[in-house]
Amino acid sequence: MRLIIAGGGTGGHLFPGIAVAEEFLARGPENEVLFVGTSRGIEARLLPKLGYKLALISASGMKGLGTARKVLSAGRLLYGYAQSRKILKEFRPDLVLGVGGYASAPLLLAARGMGIRRFIHEQNAAPGITNKILGRFVDGIFISMPESESFFPKKITMMTGNPIRKEILWGFHERVRSVGENFSVLVFGGSAGAQRVNSALLEALPHLESVKHRLRITHQTGEKDLERVRQGYRAQGCQAQVTGFIENMSAAYGAADLVICRAGATTIAEITACGKGCIFIPYPHAADDHQRKNAESLLKRDAGFMILEEELTGEKLAGEILTLMEHPERLAEVERNARSMAQLDAAQAIVAAMVRKED
Image (tube, rainbow, N blue to C red; front, side, top):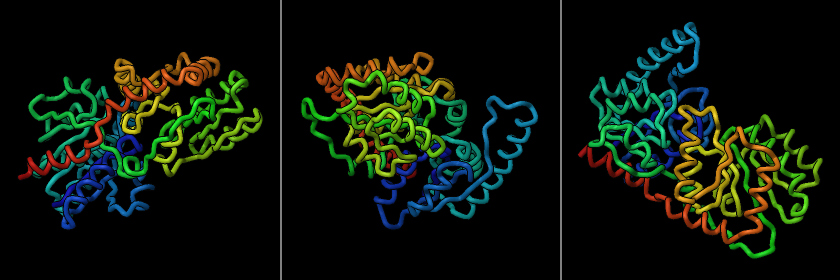
């Protein structure tokens, strides 16, 4: 069988697609996968390194654009639709899965026009407008959080969870925490980093002076902010491993006592799979405020903590860290709750459902 996975742009969209591709290819040597994305997305840099086939189309969003730029974006989408039809004719897929991102819409709509079985996966608690529209034109919808179920036709919607890459599931080894030893904090802001999160950590350090000798920080800053953050840690004499991008996330999760990060859906899936206590700082400008809603999904199950960016200060963040260092039993409770939310078989469930519908 042949599967096209359309979308990307960010790791939050792409990584679930990679997890589905891994599962689909593992089911038979005759299976083939083609990714379709844009030249500006993370897929253009990452997928060739991983050995996946990738076709590129023209596509961009329209939300928040002026009239002239909307016209230009519409032109790109029409061209992307034509490119998608050509790709579909050449690759001849049995199935198409949209994982979100600009490339998803033209490919899914072209597949509809050609009568190809098509599905979407929604990672977030609050779906974006593209998936809300595409949900009317697909054969199946896979969701990651129960909060998004009401946005889609009930008959074709299936709660699967968010697929997690094998490198996370297989490479993760939980650290055994000992009372009084070093306290490891993992900080990241998504695949491109987050300047506000980076700054908050640096601002928190003076308030953590009394425990600085115990802190071991691993901080993914994004390439643009790397040197500034490195110098900030050096200036305050704090031991930290600062990097633009963490290649081995499973090892980073395994070494961490506490995670501080944004609240993208893929991040949340990985956090729950690894059973980690996390302070979420949702990106406030995410479409439909979906990151806050993602974090709230965990908070109402006592499976995480949250500081809204508008309320974020170094002092407040330091206070949260100190509380969890002083009360490891509270952190352990949240870890257990997070782990109970994990859906480790999401990729298997999605592939099984797509193949079953094809049969």
